[in-house]
Amino acid sequence: MSLAYQAVGWNRQKKIYDACLAIGVVLYLTLFMVVGVLWFPHITAETLLLRGFGSAALVLLHFILYIGPAARLFPVLLPLLYNRRHMGVTMFFLALVHAVLALLQFHLGGDQFPLVSLLTSNGDYDSFFQFPFQLLGAFGLAVLFLMAATSHDFWLANLTAPVWKALHMLVYVAYVALILHVVLGYLQNHQAPVTQFLLVGGVWLLLMLHGLAGWREWRKDREARAEDGWVYVADVAEIRENRARIVCVAGERIAVFKYDGKVSAMSNVCQHQNGPLGEGKIVDGCVTCPWHGYQYRPHDGSSPAPFTEKIPTFKAKVTAGKVYVDPTPLPPGTPVAPALIGEGAEVTA
Amino acid sequence: MIRSLRRRAMVMSQVLLFAALLGSFIGLGMRKKVPTLPRMTYVLQVQPPAGRQIWQQDTGGDPALSAAVWVEEARLTLTLEFAQQPLYADALVYWQVDGAGDEARRLLGPLAGGRQSVFALPNEVGLADGRVVLYSLAHGEQLTAFPLPQQDLGTLPAQQEEPQ
Image 1 (cartoon, rainbow over the protein chains, first blue to last red):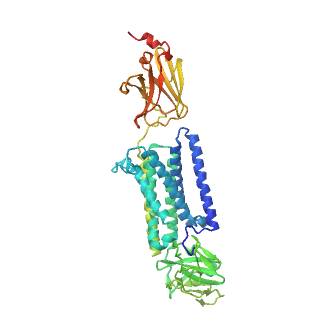
Image 2 (cartoon, each protein chain N blue to C red):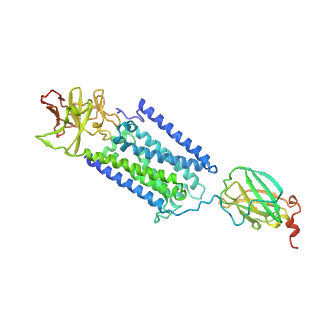
Image 3 (cartoon, rainbow over the protein chains, first blue to last red):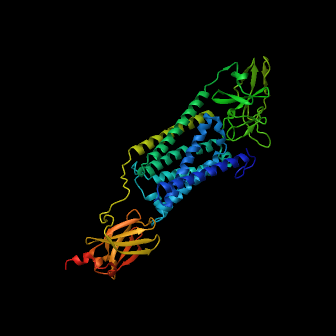
């Protein structure tokens, strides 16, 4: 959470995250170069660098796309989500180096400008196997550039969350283009089973993770029914201290938190990137989004000063050890007195 | 609204990932089988040299090149060995009589994929001074050249047996 726009809002976690990322990339490239030289002693340095940076970008892209669904399935992985945008920008630069090296190696020596050569050297657009795979890579890189350039809260706020989200969903379109770039390019002439297995296995794993996470989300979205204007959430004992139970009502999710002998309800959607607040916990008296750490006070859905984010709140009550919520949303930032957890007493917020 | 957006995103990602998987299977399963010979064998090239080495010279250059001529049963063979893998584009090897124009060059063959190349030499090398020329077809320029003097080759069986 940041009050003013900065290039990077550094904190200790981000520094550790980025250090691990940099070390990982350097280790991968070093290992790739050493193994490449030992395995293919006649390979040229240009080709080794080209393949090293290209494969590093593709591996990192897979890792980035795994994090989202994997963190939903295994919350222990949530810290990986915290600074994923730096991973994305790193991946873009690795892909950019790969593209520049490819232009230098394959398109610089001709009598055409390299980019013109890239666009005109292969015109088999009506063939699947001879399709100019370089253009698929160029398209994927262009999408990754758009995403890297807008990977900042400045753009999230100015483009608005729906537009920003739609733009960043294009990563899957880019992913398809980049997979076909590899399949119709490198793998047409290199038939090592290990490479094929890794590529197909990587795509399959991503598909499975998304499928499992989607199935789990679908189960969560079973509508709760209102009786007398109140929706049953859970027994008080079923909600862990400083944690929430999520209930789905009228097409939206409500997060009901238990803390300090009280219960408060608010929208499950973080204002930052629509993160699932109900999967977070209360830290320093504030509901903390598990994705990027945005915080809201449980009784009014407002971020603590000087921050200005606000989310809708809901009325809650505790009756005979059971927690209920009124499904009518209140305007963002509306204060609602928390429901007190009394022994057998009916307490209405 | 968020829930509908999330569902749309989930369906979109599933469809696109399935398309990626399907494209991978089609692309890998139906590709053309490419022969993967470790080294090409050219018509003009001969087997590795045998017999007696009658001439040898380190011609320098980058990478350093060592040339040698071998003789066996009236057949002359030229070997070119680079210190490192040469990165020449479409390199062709010629023998050329001194003083003759480029159009009179005799093609010995293309450089092999490895560090060493072997070529059969024409009998004329024992009759006149000449030079070996490496020429890049891709760049249209001479890469390097070195002399192959007649007298250095000594009295060649090929020369003795040449019909008059």
